[in-house]
Picture 1 (cartoon, rainbow, N blue to C red):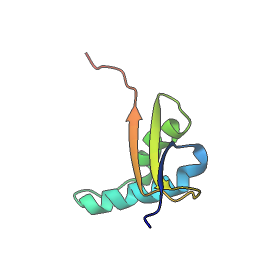
Picture 2: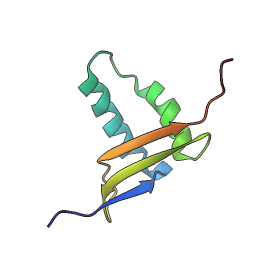
Picture 3: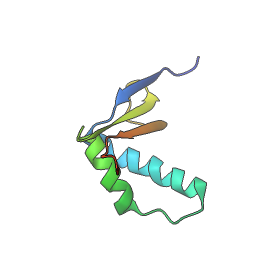
Picture 4: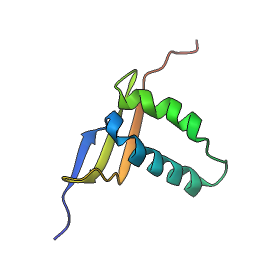
Length: 78
């Protein structure tokens, strides 16, 4: 039987799992060296629902993160 996945809104308690998957994604892309500090400047506010939100996918009843989406609200440059 396949494990049940849940889609939920990320919280500050998810920071370690989110940073791990973000670094893995950067390494998989492989065209730049990832900067944990720069990733954190986008991820941390969204986990706190400050001008953004982060959706997380993982097995039900665990803190494991298997997928994520980061949506940020920004100001238009024009």
